Length: 232
Image (cartoon, rainbow, N blue to C red):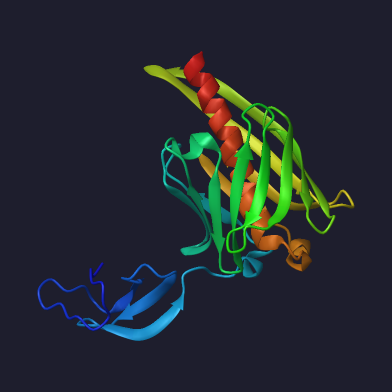
């Protein structure tokens, strides 16, 4: 990737080929590099979450110490979870970034924790999520009064011994709307997490946030499982 803090500089030695690259100034856009200089052509970093309704998203993540996890539709990023705190994901706090908005997730407490969702720009509270038990069930209450239910429908961990101890995790989760209908599914199998917003979810006004939260909930459950494994 070309490294420049301005868009007018030119690289003549080892310059990469023309292509879209992350904006060199750190803005949330792709900027076009013509092979010798940055241009003024830009496109959004995030693809629309709403375009992903009815398709399967994959969580691109690097483990509990990762600084950020990306929810992707193919190669396009639709949501990013940027983790905060000295222990990264272990603290539960994160900033959610999408093309349709950004939010701060403030985890309050550790056992049966409450997660307060704040608008990243204004600091206004937009939702509260409360775990009911062991990071497997909970209720999300949106500020407009809409309530969603999150549930782990099938979860397991199986110990296998192949030379050294290893663990295999399986999980199936759903977010249910106020009518009790599933709107977003999530699966965890052998370290791969996928998020599936059903076609009917496209009409939800809070879809970008809900998709990111689905990824967050699965990751927090997975963290709880790996933590308990380390304690075995």
